[in-house]
Image (cartoon, rainbow, N blue to C red; front, side, top):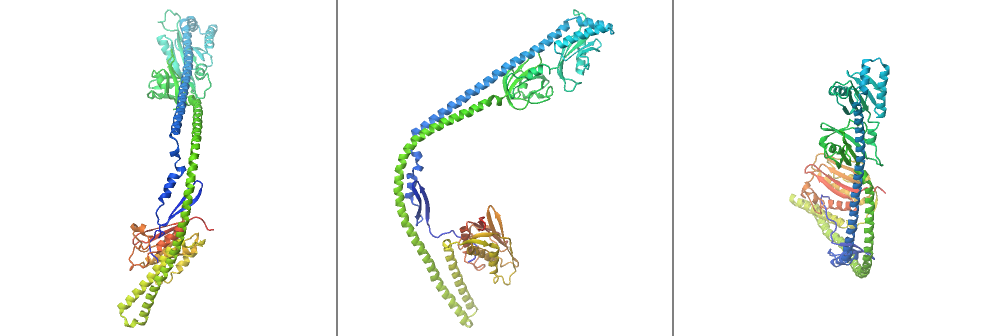
Length: 637
Protein backbone atom coordinates (compact mmCIF):
# COMPACT_ATOMS: atom_id res chain seq x y z
CA UNK A 1 0.00 0.00 0.00
CA UNK A 2 2.98 2.31 0.54
CA UNK A 3 4.72 3.77 -2.52
CA UNK A 4 5.58 7.08 -4.09
CA UNK A 5 2.73 7.76 -6.59
CA UNK A 6 -0.49 9.70 -7.20
CA UNK A 7 -3.82 9.73 -9.05
CA UNK A 8 -6.17 12.28 -10.52
CA UNK A 9 -9.30 12.15 -8.32
CA UNK A 10 -12.38 10.52 -9.76
CA UNK A 11 -13.01 7.68 -12.11
CA UNK A 12 -16.18 8.92 -13.73
CA UNK A 13 -16.66 11.97 -16.00
CA UNK A 14 -19.30 14.22 -14.44
CA UNK A 15 -19.78 17.73 -15.79
CA UNK A 16 -21.26 20.22 -13.28
CA UNK A 17 -22.07 23.76 -14.33
CA UNK A 18 -23.57 26.40 -12.04
CA UNK A 19 -25.84 28.74 -13.87
CA UNK A 20 -27.25 32.01 -12.68
CA UNK A 21 -29.66 34.21 -14.56
CA UNK A 22 -32.24 36.90 -14.05
CA UNK A 23 -35.42 35.74 -12.44
CA UNK A 24 -34.28 32.14 -11.83
CA UNK A 25 -32.57 30.18 -9.11
CA UNK A 26 -29.17 28.48 -9.43
CA UNK A 27 -29.15 25.38 -11.63
CA UNK A 28 -26.78 22.44 -11.70
CA UNK A 29 -26.23 21.00 -15.13
CA UNK A 30 -25.17 17.34 -14.88
CA UNK A 31 -23.91 15.46 -17.89
CA UNK A 32 -23.19 11.83 -17.01
CA UNK A 33 -21.27 11.36 -20.26
CA UNK A 34 -19.02 14.27 -19.48
CA UNK A 35 -20.06 16.20 -22.61
CA UNK A 36 -21.03 19.89 -22.33
CA UNK A 37 -24.62 20.87 -22.96
CA UNK A 38 -24.04 22.95 -26.08
CA UNK A 39 -27.72 23.74 -26.48
CA UNK A 40 -27.95 25.25 -23.02
CA UNK A 41 -24.68 27.10 -23.41
CA UNK A 42 -25.88 28.57 -26.70
CA UNK A 43 -29.04 29.77 -24.98
CA UNK A 44 -27.05 31.41 -22.19
CA UNK A 45 -24.82 33.09 -24.76
CA UNK A 46 -27.51 34.29 -27.14
CA UNK A 47 -30.60 34.45 -24.95
CA UNK A 48 -29.37 36.31 -21.88
CA UNK A 49 -30.13 40.00 -22.38
CA UNK A 50 -27.36 41.00 -20.00
CA UNK A 51 -24.82 39.58 -22.47
CA UNK A 52 -26.40 41.17 -25.54
CA UNK A 53 -27.39 44.66 -24.48
CA UNK A 54 -24.64 46.17 -26.55
CA UNK A 55 -26.03 44.33 -29.58
CA UNK A 56 -29.46 45.79 -28.88
CA UNK A 57 -28.12 49.30 -28.27
CA UNK A 58 -29.03 51.42 -31.33
CA UNK A 59 -26.02 52.69 -33.22
CA UNK A 60 -27.66 56.07 -33.63
CA UNK A 61 -27.60 56.58 -29.85
CA UNK A 62 -23.92 55.66 -29.73
CA UNK A 63 -23.01 58.06 -32.54
CA UNK A 64 -25.09 60.82 -30.97
CA UNK A 65 -23.38 60.35 -27.61
CA UNK A 66 -19.91 60.32 -29.17
CA UNK A 67 -20.64 63.38 -31.32
CA UNK A 68 -21.99 65.45 -28.44
CA UNK A 69 -19.21 64.31 -26.09
CA UNK A 70 -16.52 65.30 -28.58
CA UNK A 71 -18.25 68.62 -29.22
CA UNK A 72 -18.57 69.49 -25.53
CA UNK A 73 -14.97 68.45 -24.87
CA UNK A 74 -13.73 70.53 -27.82
CA UNK A 75 -15.57 73.61 -26.54
CA UNK A 76 -14.05 73.08 -23.10
CA UNK A 77 -10.54 72.74 -24.56
CA UNK A 78 -10.95 75.84 -26.75
CA UNK A 79 -12.20 77.86 -23.78
CA UNK A 80 -9.29 76.72 -21.64
CA UNK A 81 -6.80 77.54 -24.43
CA UNK A 82 -8.33 81.01 -24.84
CA UNK A 83 -8.09 81.63 -21.09
CA UNK A 84 -4.48 80.45 -21.12
CA UNK A 85 -3.58 83.02 -23.79
CA UNK A 86 -5.45 85.77 -21.98
CA UNK A 87 -3.73 85.09 -18.67
CA UNK A 88 -0.32 85.11 -20.35
CA UNK A 89 -1.02 88.29 -22.33
CA UNK A 90 -2.26 90.02 -19.17
CA UNK A 91 0.89 89.01 -17.29
CA UNK A 92 3.08 90.21 -20.18
CA UNK A 93 1.36 93.60 -20.26
CA UNK A 94 1.71 94.00 -16.50
CA UNK A 95 5.40 93.07 -16.59
CA UNK A 96 6.07 95.45 -19.48
CA UNK A 97 4.27 98.33 -17.77
CA UNK A 98 6.08 97.83 -14.46
CA UNK A 99 9.42 97.40 -16.23
CA UNK A 100 8.90 100.59 -18.26
CA UNK A 101 8.07 102.55 -15.12
CA UNK A 102 11.02 101.28 -13.10
CA UNK A 103 13.53 101.60 -15.92
CA UNK A 104 12.42 105.20 -16.37
CA UNK A 105 12.72 105.91 -12.63
CA UNK A 106 16.16 104.32 -12.31
CA UNK A 107 17.41 106.10 -15.42
CA UNK A 108 16.15 109.47 -14.16
CA UNK A 109 17.70 108.87 -10.75
CA UNK A 110 21.06 108.08 -12.32
CA UNK A 111 20.85 111.03 -14.73
CA UNK A 112 19.91 113.46 -11.95
CA UNK A 113 23.04 112.53 -10.02
CA UNK A 114 25.15 113.03 -13.13
CA UNK A 115 23.56 116.46 -13.64
CA UNK A 116 24.30 117.37 -10.04
CA UNK A 117 27.89 116.26 -10.42
CA UNK A 118 28.15 118.43 -13.53
CA UNK A 119 27.12 121.44 -11.42
CA UNK A 120 30.15 121.04 -9.16
CA UNK A 121 32.32 120.35 -12.16
CA UNK A 122 31.32 123.67 -13.68
CA UNK A 123 31.31 125.77 -10.44
CA UNK A 124 34.53 127.55 -9.30
CA UNK A 125 33.10 128.38 -5.86
CA UNK A 126 34.25 125.25 -4.11
CA UNK A 127 37.63 125.34 -5.86
CA UNK A 128 38.31 128.92 -4.76
CA UNK A 129 37.33 128.14 -1.18
CA UNK A 130 39.51 125.05 -1.20
CA UNK A 131 42.46 126.98 -2.66
CA UNK A 132 42.13 129.74 -0.08
CA UNK A 133 41.81 127.25 2.75
CA UNK A 134 44.91 125.35 1.64
CA UNK A 135 46.87 128.64 1.79
CA UNK A 136 45.52 129.36 5.29
CA UNK A 137 44.49 126.08 7.04
CA UNK A 138 43.91 127.92 10.32
CA UNK A 139 41.01 129.90 8.88
CA UNK A 140 38.10 128.28 10.73
CA UNK A 141 35.51 130.49 9.09
CA UNK A 142 36.67 129.45 5.64
CA UNK A 143 36.56 125.74 6.62
CA UNK A 144 33.05 126.14 7.99
CA UNK A 145 32.01 127.74 4.71
CA UNK A 146 33.28 124.69 2.84
CA UNK A 147 31.43 122.37 5.22
CA UNK A 148 28.20 124.31 4.71
CA UNK A 149 28.51 123.96 0.96
CA UNK A 150 29.12 120.21 1.27
CA UNK A 151 26.29 119.77 3.76
CA UNK A 152 23.80 121.50 1.46
CA UNK A 153 24.80 119.17 -1.37
CA UNK A 154 24.66 116.09 0.88
CA UNK A 155 21.20 116.85 2.24
CA UNK A 156 19.75 118.17 -0.99
CA UNK A 157 20.61 115.10 -3.06
CA UNK A 158 20.53 112.44 -0.33
CA UNK A 159 24.16 111.47 -0.46
CA UNK A 160 25.25 109.23 2.37
CA UNK A 161 28.61 111.03 2.53
CA UNK A 162 30.40 113.94 0.82
CA UNK A 163 34.18 114.16 1.17
CA UNK A 164 36.64 116.80 -0.10
CA UNK A 165 40.28 115.96 -0.85
CA UNK A 166 43.08 118.41 -1.65
CA UNK A 167 45.56 118.15 -4.51
CA UNK A 168 47.71 115.83 -2.40
CA UNK A 169 44.69 113.56 -1.95
CA UNK A 170 44.48 114.37 1.74
CA UNK A 171 41.04 114.57 3.31
CA UNK A 172 40.11 118.17 3.99
CA UNK A 173 36.66 117.61 5.46
CA UNK A 174 33.69 115.27 5.28
CA UNK A 175 29.93 115.40 5.83
CA UNK A 176 29.05 113.88 8.17
CA UNK A 177 32.40 114.42 9.81
CA UNK A 178 32.39 111.17 11.83
CA UNK A 179 32.61 109.01 8.67
CA UNK A 180 36.03 109.86 7.31
CA UNK A 181 37.10 106.38 6.20
CA UNK A 182 38.11 105.83 2.60
CA UNK A 183 38.32 102.43 0.91
CA UNK A 184 40.83 101.22 -1.64
CA UNK A 185 38.37 101.53 -4.51
CA UNK A 186 37.70 105.19 -3.62
CA UNK A 187 41.43 105.92 -3.33
CA UNK A 188 42.03 104.47 -6.78
CA UNK A 189 39.25 106.58 -8.30
CA UNK A 190 40.52 109.73 -6.50
CA UNK A 191 43.97 109.22 -8.02
CA UNK A 192 42.50 108.62 -11.46
CA UNK A 193 40.31 111.73 -11.20
CA UNK A 194 43.30 113.88 -10.18
CA UNK A 195 45.28 112.45 -13.08
CA UNK A 196 42.80 112.89 -15.93
CA UNK A 197 40.73 115.79 -14.55
CA UNK A 198 37.41 114.19 -15.53
CA UNK A 199 34.26 113.21 -13.64
CA UNK A 200 34.32 109.52 -12.73
CA UNK A 201 31.74 107.12 -11.32
CA UNK A 202 32.41 103.94 -9.41
CA UNK A 203 29.63 101.44 -10.01
CA UNK A 204 27.88 99.67 -7.15
CA UNK A 205 30.43 97.78 -5.07
CA UNK A 206 30.91 96.28 -1.61
CA UNK A 207 33.03 98.38 0.72
CA UNK A 208 36.33 96.90 1.82
CA UNK A 209 36.13 98.89 5.09
CA UNK A 210 32.54 98.46 6.27
CA UNK A 211 31.26 94.88 6.16
CA UNK A 212 28.45 94.13 3.66
CA UNK A 213 28.09 97.85 2.86
CA UNK A 214 27.08 98.41 -0.78
CA UNK A 215 27.60 101.87 -2.23
CA UNK A 216 28.52 103.81 -5.36
CA UNK A 217 30.58 107.02 -5.63
CA UNK A 218 30.78 110.07 -7.89
CA UNK A 219 34.22 111.76 -8.17
CA UNK A 220 34.43 115.40 -9.39
CA UNK A 221 37.71 117.23 -10.05
CA UNK A 222 37.70 120.75 -8.50
CA UNK A 223 39.24 123.47 -10.71
CA UNK A 224 39.89 127.05 -9.64
CA UNK A 225 39.52 128.13 -13.24
CA UNK A 226 36.80 126.25 -15.09
CA UNK A 227 38.04 127.64 -18.36
CA UNK A 228 41.36 125.88 -17.87
CA UNK A 229 40.43 122.27 -17.19
CA UNK A 230 43.66 121.09 -18.61
CA UNK A 231 45.44 122.28 -15.47
CA UNK A 232 45.86 120.20 -12.35
CA UNK A 233 42.73 120.14 -10.15
CA UNK A 234 42.81 121.84 -6.76
CA UNK A 235 41.22 118.72 -5.26
CA UNK A 236 38.57 116.02 -5.68
CA UNK A 237 35.02 115.98 -4.38
CA UNK A 238 33.71 112.48 -3.57
CA UNK A 239 29.92 112.00 -3.23
CA UNK A 240 28.83 108.60 -1.92
CA UNK A 241 25.39 107.10 -2.59
CA UNK A 242 23.82 104.42 -0.38
CA UNK A 243 21.50 102.41 -2.72
CA UNK A 244 19.50 101.21 0.27
CA UNK A 245 18.11 104.73 0.66
CA UNK A 246 16.32 104.94 -2.69
CA UNK A 247 17.35 102.72 -5.56
CA UNK A 248 17.05 99.32 -3.81
CA UNK A 249 13.61 100.05 -2.29
CA UNK A 250 12.49 101.26 -5.71
CA UNK A 251 13.71 98.06 -7.35
CA UNK A 252 12.23 95.80 -4.69
CA UNK A 253 8.77 97.41 -4.62
CA UNK A 254 5.86 95.95 -6.62
CA UNK A 255 2.69 97.92 -7.35
CA UNK A 256 0.29 94.96 -7.04
CA UNK A 257 -0.17 92.06 -4.63
CA UNK A 258 2.07 89.18 -5.65
CA UNK A 259 3.77 86.30 -3.85
CA UNK A 260 6.61 85.78 -6.32
CA UNK A 261 7.06 88.89 -8.49
CA UNK A 262 10.28 90.90 -8.19
CA UNK A 263 12.62 93.20 -10.08
CA UNK A 264 16.32 92.54 -10.49
CA UNK A 265 19.14 94.91 -11.34
CA UNK A 266 22.14 93.17 -12.95
CA UNK A 267 25.34 93.96 -14.79
CA UNK A 268 27.92 91.94 -16.70
CA UNK A 269 31.42 91.33 -15.39
CA UNK A 270 33.58 89.28 -17.76
CA UNK A 271 31.71 85.99 -18.30
CA UNK A 272 29.37 86.42 -15.35
CA UNK A 273 26.12 88.17 -14.53
CA UNK A 274 26.23 89.96 -11.17
CA UNK A 275 23.02 90.59 -9.22
CA UNK A 276 23.25 94.11 -7.78
CA UNK A 277 20.27 94.32 -5.41
CA UNK A 278 18.96 92.17 -2.57
CA UNK A 279 16.59 89.49 -3.89
CA UNK A 280 13.14 88.60 -2.64
CA UNK A 281 13.63 84.86 -2.35
CA UNK A 282 17.28 84.74 -1.31
CA UNK A 283 19.07 86.86 1.29
CA UNK A 284 22.56 88.47 1.27
CA UNK A 285 22.84 88.34 -2.50
CA UNK A 286 23.67 91.95 -3.46
CA UNK A 287 26.90 91.80 -5.51
CA UNK A 288 27.40 88.23 -4.17
CA UNK A 289 25.23 86.12 -6.46
CA UNK A 290 26.77 85.45 -9.86
CA UNK A 291 25.63 83.31 -12.80
CA UNK A 292 27.78 82.28 -15.80
CA UNK A 293 26.68 83.80 -19.09
CA UNK A 294 26.68 80.38 -20.81
CA UNK A 295 23.18 79.84 -19.33
CA UNK A 296 21.76 82.23 -21.91
CA UNK A 297 18.76 80.14 -22.86
CA UNK A 298 17.79 79.37 -19.27
CA UNK A 299 18.08 82.50 -17.10
CA UNK A 300 16.37 85.79 -18.07
CA UNK A 301 19.13 87.78 -16.30
CA UNK A 302 21.71 86.24 -18.61
CA UNK A 303 19.51 86.89 -21.64
CA UNK A 304 19.32 90.57 -20.64
CA UNK A 305 23.10 91.17 -20.57
CA UNK A 306 23.42 89.25 -23.86
CA UNK A 307 21.29 91.88 -25.58
CA UNK A 308 17.84 90.27 -25.49
CA UNK A 309 14.97 92.68 -24.82
CA UNK A 310 11.27 92.07 -24.24
CA UNK A 311 9.32 89.12 -22.85
CA UNK A 312 11.23 85.88 -22.25
CA UNK A 313 10.44 82.64 -20.47
CA UNK A 314 13.00 80.63 -18.52
CA UNK A 315 14.15 79.75 -15.03
CA UNK A 316 15.38 82.24 -12.45
CA UNK A 317 18.24 82.01 -9.96
CA UNK A 318 16.15 79.49 -7.93
CA UNK A 319 15.63 77.20 -10.91
CA UNK A 320 11.90 78.09 -10.92
CA UNK A 321 10.10 78.67 -14.27
CA UNK A 322 9.30 82.38 -14.70
CA UNK A 323 7.95 84.87 -17.21
CA UNK A 324 10.15 87.97 -17.41
CA UNK A 325 10.57 91.32 -19.13
CA UNK A 326 14.27 92.11 -19.73
CA UNK A 327 15.79 95.38 -20.95
CA UNK A 328 18.77 97.74 -20.61
CA UNK A 329 18.52 100.75 -18.28
CA UNK A 330 19.47 103.82 -20.42
CA UNK A 331 22.43 105.99 -19.31
CA UNK A 332 23.58 103.21 -16.91
CA UNK A 333 25.68 100.04 -17.19
CA UNK A 334 22.77 98.11 -15.72
CA UNK A 335 20.04 95.80 -16.99
CA UNK A 336 16.63 95.25 -15.43
CA UNK A 337 14.72 91.96 -15.13
CA UNK A 338 11.06 92.16 -14.13
CA UNK A 339 9.73 88.67 -13.48
CA UNK A 340 6.99 86.55 -11.92
CA UNK A 341 6.63 82.79 -11.40
CA UNK A 342 4.64 80.96 -14.08
CA UNK A 343 2.91 79.00 -11.34
CA UNK A 344 1.48 82.22 -9.89
CA UNK A 345 0.36 83.41 -13.32
CA UNK A 346 -1.52 80.21 -14.07
CA UNK A 347 -2.79 79.49 -10.54
CA UNK A 348 -6.22 81.07 -11.22
CA UNK A 349 -6.28 79.24 -14.56
CA UNK A 350 -5.93 75.90 -12.77
CA UNK A 351 -9.04 76.64 -10.73
CA UNK A 352 -10.89 77.63 -13.89
CA UNK A 353 -9.66 74.46 -15.60
CA UNK A 354 -11.09 72.34 -12.77
CA UNK A 355 -14.39 74.21 -12.98
CA UNK A 356 -14.46 73.80 -16.76
CA UNK A 357 -13.64 70.11 -16.49
CA UNK A 358 -16.39 69.57 -13.92
CA UNK A 359 -18.86 71.42 -16.15
CA UNK A 360 -17.88 69.36 -19.19
CA UNK A 361 -18.17 66.14 -17.21
CA UNK A 362 -21.55 67.21 -15.85
CA UNK A 363 -22.82 67.94 -19.37
CA UNK A 364 -21.51 64.62 -20.68
CA UNK A 365 -23.06 62.82 -17.71
CA UNK A 366 -26.41 64.53 -18.28
CA UNK A 367 -26.26 63.64 -21.95
CA UNK A 368 -25.33 60.04 -21.12
CA UNK A 369 -28.22 59.91 -18.68
CA UNK A 370 -30.64 61.05 -21.37
CA UNK A 371 -29.35 58.53 -23.90
CA UNK A 372 -29.42 55.88 -21.20
CA UNK A 373 -33.07 56.55 -20.44
CA UNK A 374 -33.93 56.07 -24.11
CA UNK A 375 -31.91 52.87 -24.13
CA UNK A 376 -33.48 51.62 -20.92
CA UNK A 377 -36.99 51.99 -22.32
CA UNK A 378 -36.07 49.86 -25.33
CA UNK A 379 -34.10 47.44 -23.17
CA UNK A 380 -37.04 46.87 -20.84
CA UNK A 381 -39.18 45.58 -23.69
CA UNK A 382 -36.49 43.24 -24.97
CA UNK A 383 -35.66 42.12 -21.45
CA UNK A 384 -39.25 41.16 -20.74
CA UNK A 385 -39.40 39.03 -23.87
CA UNK A 386 -36.05 37.43 -23.12
CA UNK A 387 -37.02 36.67 -19.51
CA UNK A 388 -40.14 34.84 -20.65
CA UNK A 389 -38.07 32.73 -23.04
CA UNK A 390 -35.50 32.04 -20.36
CA UNK A 391 -38.09 31.03 -17.76
CA UNK A 392 -39.54 28.54 -20.23
CA UNK A 393 -36.12 27.12 -21.00
CA UNK A 394 -35.18 26.99 -17.31
CA UNK A 395 -38.33 25.02 -16.58
CA UNK A 396 -37.37 22.52 -19.27
CA UNK A 397 -33.82 22.25 -17.97
CA UNK A 398 -35.05 21.84 -14.39
CA UNK A 399 -37.10 18.84 -15.43
CA UNK A 400 -34.13 17.37 -17.29
CA UNK A 401 -31.99 18.01 -14.23
CA UNK A 402 -34.33 16.02 -12.01
CA UNK A 403 -34.13 13.08 -14.39
CA UNK A 404 -30.33 13.23 -14.63
CA UNK A 405 -29.99 13.61 -10.87
CA UNK A 406 -32.00 10.43 -10.38
CA UNK A 407 -29.81 8.66 -12.94
CA UNK A 408 -26.67 9.89 -11.17
CA UNK A 409 -27.89 8.66 -7.79
CA UNK A 410 -28.67 5.27 -9.31
CA UNK A 411 -25.22 5.08 -10.91
CA UNK A 412 -23.54 5.96 -7.62
CA UNK A 413 -25.50 3.26 -5.80
CA UNK A 414 -24.54 0.74 -8.48
CA UNK A 415 -20.92 1.87 -8.20
CA UNK A 416 -20.90 1.35 -4.46
CA UNK A 417 -22.49 -2.09 -4.84
CA UNK A 418 -19.97 -2.92 -7.54
CA UNK A 419 -17.06 -1.87 -5.33
CA UNK A 420 -18.11 -4.12 -2.49
CA UNK A 421 -18.85 -6.93 -4.97
CA UNK A 422 -15.42 -6.61 -6.52
CA UNK A 423 -13.83 -6.62 -3.10
CA UNK A 424 -15.69 -9.78 -2.08
CA UNK A 425 -15.51 -11.65 -5.40
CA UNK A 426 -11.81 -10.98 -5.96
CA UNK A 427 -10.64 -11.47 -2.41
CA UNK A 428 -12.39 -14.85 -1.93
CA UNK A 429 -10.30 -16.68 -4.57
CA UNK A 430 -7.18 -14.99 -3.25
CA UNK A 431 -7.91 -16.19 0.26
CA UNK A 432 -8.40 -19.72 -1.16
CA UNK A 433 -5.09 -19.53 -3.01
CA UNK A 434 -3.29 -18.32 0.09
CA UNK A 435 -5.01 -20.93 2.27
CA UNK A 436 -4.23 -23.91 0.04
CA UNK A 437 -0.67 -22.71 -0.42
CA UNK A 438 -0.34 -22.53 3.36
CA UNK A 439 -1.66 -26.13 3.69
CA UNK A 440 0.80 -27.34 1.08
CA UNK A 441 3.62 -25.60 2.87
CA UNK A 442 2.52 -27.03 6.23
CA UNK A 443 1.52 -30.62 5.31
CA UNK A 444 3.81 -31.36 2.37
CA UNK A 445 6.83 -29.36 3.30
CA UNK A 446 8.93 -32.50 3.64
CA UNK A 447 8.08 -33.67 0.14
CA UNK A 448 9.01 -30.36 -1.52
CA UNK A 449 12.48 -29.40 -2.53
CA UNK A 450 13.87 -25.89 -2.00
CA UNK A 451 12.54 -24.60 -5.32
CA UNK A 452 9.04 -25.86 -4.53
CA UNK A 453 9.09 -24.17 -1.15
CA UNK A 454 10.25 -20.93 -2.78
CA UNK A 455 7.45 -21.06 -5.31
CA UNK A 456 4.90 -21.56 -2.51
CA UNK A 457 6.25 -18.48 -0.78
CA UNK A 458 6.00 -16.54 -4.04
CA UNK A 459 2.37 -17.68 -4.47
CA UNK A 460 1.44 -16.70 -0.94
CA UNK A 461 3.24 -13.35 -1.22
CA UNK A 462 1.53 -12.57 -4.52
CA UNK A 463 -1.87 -13.46 -3.04
CA UNK A 464 -1.30 -11.20 -0.05
CA UNK A 465 -0.04 -8.40 -2.29
CA UNK A 466 -3.07 -8.74 -4.54
CA UNK A 467 -5.36 -8.70 -1.53
CA UNK A 468 -3.69 -5.59 -0.19
CA UNK A 469 -3.94 -3.97 -3.63
CA UNK A 470 -7.69 -4.68 -3.75
CA UNK A 471 -8.11 -3.19 -0.27
CA UNK A 472 -6.09 -0.12 -1.24
CA UNK A 473 -8.02 0.40 -4.48
CA UNK A 474 -11.33 0.06 -2.66
CA UNK A 475 -10.23 2.54 0.00
CA UNK A 476 -8.88 4.92 -2.65
CA UNK A 477 -12.05 4.81 -4.77
CA UNK A 478 -14.30 5.43 -1.78
CA UNK A 479 -12.15 8.15 -0.22
CA UNK A 480 -14.09 11.03 -1.76
CA UNK A 481 -17.40 9.57 -0.51
CA UNK A 482 -16.16 8.91 2.97
CA UNK A 483 -17.55 11.39 5.48
CA UNK A 484 -14.97 13.53 7.26
CA UNK A 485 -15.26 13.86 11.03
CA UNK A 486 -13.13 16.86 11.92
CA UNK A 487 -11.75 17.50 15.37
CA UNK A 488 -8.62 18.95 16.93
CA UNK A 489 -5.81 16.52 16.18
CA UNK A 490 -2.63 16.49 18.27
CA UNK A 491 -0.08 15.82 15.56
CA UNK A 492 2.76 15.18 18.03
CA UNK A 493 0.76 12.40 19.67
CA UNK A 494 -0.47 11.01 16.34
CA UNK A 495 3.04 10.78 14.84
CA UNK A 496 4.43 9.06 17.92
CA UNK A 497 1.56 6.54 17.96
CA UNK A 498 2.04 5.74 14.27
CA UNK A 499 5.79 5.38 14.71
CA UNK A 500 5.26 2.98 17.60
CA UNK A 501 3.39 0.72 15.16
CA UNK A 502 6.59 0.21 13.17
CA UNK A 503 8.38 -1.46 16.09
CA UNK A 504 8.25 -4.88 14.42
CA UNK A 505 9.61 -3.54 11.10
CA UNK A 506 12.50 -1.80 12.87
CA UNK A 507 13.87 -4.85 14.69
CA UNK A 508 17.54 -5.31 13.96
CA UNK A 509 17.83 -1.87 12.33
CA UNK A 510 19.44 1.38 13.46
CA UNK A 511 16.74 3.97 12.74
CA UNK A 512 16.67 7.29 14.56
CA UNK A 513 13.55 9.51 14.40
CA UNK A 514 13.51 13.20 15.31
CA UNK A 515 10.02 14.62 15.91
CA UNK A 516 9.87 18.41 16.18
CA UNK A 517 7.21 20.56 17.81
CA UNK A 518 4.10 19.97 15.68
CA UNK A 519 0.97 22.16 15.82
CA UNK A 520 -2.58 20.93 16.34
CA UNK A 521 -4.63 20.47 13.16
CA UNK A 522 -8.39 20.63 12.69
CA UNK A 523 -9.14 17.58 10.55
CA UNK A 524 -10.20 13.96 10.34
CA UNK A 525 -7.93 12.04 12.72
CA UNK A 526 -8.31 8.69 10.92
CA UNK A 527 -7.44 10.18 7.54
CA UNK A 528 -4.49 12.12 8.96
CA UNK A 529 -3.26 8.91 10.58
CA UNK A 530 -3.40 7.28 7.13
CA UNK A 531 -1.29 10.13 5.69
CA UNK A 532 1.37 9.91 8.39
CA UNK A 533 1.42 6.09 8.26
CA UNK A 534 2.00 6.04 4.49
CA UNK A 535 4.77 8.65 4.58
CA UNK A 536 6.56 7.12 7.59
CA UNK A 537 6.24 3.66 6.02
CA UNK A 538 7.96 5.00 2.91
CA UNK A 539 10.79 6.44 5.03
CA UNK A 540 11.22 3.12 6.87
CA UNK A 541 11.15 1.18 3.62
CA UNK A 542 13.46 3.36 1.54
CA UNK A 543 16.11 3.72 4.29
CA UNK A 544 16.44 -0.06 4.58
CA UNK A 545 19.82 -0.03 2.85
CA UNK A 546 21.26 2.55 5.26
CA UNK A 547 23.27 1.35 8.24
CA UNK A 548 22.19 4.42 10.22
CA UNK A 549 18.80 5.64 9.02
CA UNK A 550 17.47 9.07 10.03
CA UNK A 551 13.85 10.21 9.83
CA UNK A 552 12.92 13.80 10.73
CA UNK A 553 9.37 15.11 11.21
CA UNK A 554 8.98 18.89 11.44
CA UNK A 555 6.52 21.73 10.88
CA UNK A 556 6.50 25.46 10.18
CA UNK A 557 4.08 28.24 9.29
CA UNK A 558 4.48 29.66 5.77
CA UNK A 559 2.08 31.91 3.85
CA UNK A 560 -0.78 31.26 6.29
CA UNK A 561 -0.30 27.49 6.06
CA UNK A 562 0.87 24.85 8.52
CA UNK A 563 3.53 22.99 6.53
CA UNK A 564 4.64 19.54 7.75
CA UNK A 565 7.69 17.70 6.47
CA UNK A 566 8.89 14.09 6.74
CA UNK A 567 12.52 13.79 5.71
CA UNK A 568 14.74 10.69 5.41
CA UNK A 569 18.23 9.82 4.22
CA UNK A 570 17.11 6.89 2.08
CA UNK A 571 17.59 6.08 -1.58
CA UNK A 572 15.78 9.22 -2.72
CA UNK A 573 14.43 9.63 -6.26
CA UNK A 574 15.15 11.41 -9.53
CA UNK A 575 13.44 14.84 -9.59
CA UNK A 576 12.81 14.31 -13.30
CA UNK A 577 9.87 12.12 -12.30
CA UNK A 578 8.49 14.32 -9.51
CA UNK A 579 5.31 15.11 -11.51
CA UNK A 580 4.51 11.36 -11.73
CA UNK A 581 5.24 10.63 -8.09
CA UNK A 582 1.63 10.86 -6.91
CA UNK A 583 0.06 8.93 -9.82
CA UNK A 584 -1.75 5.64 -9.11
CA UNK A 585 0.48 2.56 -9.64
CA UNK A 586 3.44 4.82 -10.35
CA UNK A 587 6.66 3.23 -9.09
CA UNK A 588 10.17 4.62 -9.31
CA UNK A 589 11.85 1.43 -8.04
CA UNK A 590 11.58 -2.23 -9.03
CA UNK A 591 9.12 -4.49 -7.16
CA UNK A 592 11.85 -6.94 -6.17
CA UNK A 593 13.85 -4.02 -4.75
CA UNK A 594 11.10 -2.34 -2.70
CA UNK A 595 7.65 -3.81 -2.15
CA UNK A 596 4.42 -1.79 -2.45
CA UNK A 597 1.14 -1.45 -4.36
CA UNK A 598 1.66 2.03 -5.83
CA UNK A 599 -1.47 3.44 -4.16
CA UNK A 600 -0.10 4.99 -0.96
CA UNK A 601 1.02 8.41 -2.18
CA UNK A 602 -2.07 8.81 -4.37
CA UNK A 603 -4.17 8.19 -1.25
CA UNK A 604 -2.08 10.73 0.69
CA UNK A 605 -2.67 13.34 -1.98
CA UNK A 606 -6.42 12.76 -2.03
CA UNK A 607 -6.69 13.04 1.77
CA UNK A 608 -4.63 16.25 1.87
CA UNK A 609 -6.69 17.77 -0.95
CA UNK A 610 -9.90 16.97 0.94
CA UNK A 611 -8.49 18.98 3.84
CA UNK A 612 -7.81 21.93 1.52
CA UNK A 613 -4.05 21.47 1.57
CA UNK A 614 -1.16 20.65 -0.74
CA UNK A 615 1.41 17.86 -0.96
CA UNK A 616 4.74 17.82 -2.79
CA UNK A 617 8.18 16.21 -2.58
CA UNK A 618 11.85 16.73 -3.33
CA UNK A 619 14.63 14.21 -3.50
CA UNK A 620 18.01 13.28 -4.83
CA UNK A 621 19.11 9.83 -5.90
CA UNK A 622 21.11 8.26 -3.07
CA UNK A 623 20.65 11.30 -0.82
CA UNK A 624 17.16 10.86 0.62
CA UNK A 625 13.82 12.55 0.10
CA UNK A 626 11.51 14.96 1.88
CA UNK A 627 7.71 15.05 1.62
CA UNK A 628 5.76 18.17 2.51
CA UNK A 629 2.05 18.46 3.14
CA UNK A 630 0.20 21.59 4.24
CA UNK A 631 -3.07 22.67 5.82
CA UNK A 632 -4.64 26.14 5.93
CA UNK A 633 -4.02 27.90 9.25
CA UNK A 634 -7.60 27.64 10.51
CA UNK A 635 -6.35 26.96 14.03
CA UNK A 636 -7.67 24.29 16.36
CA UNK A 637 -11.33 24.68 17.16
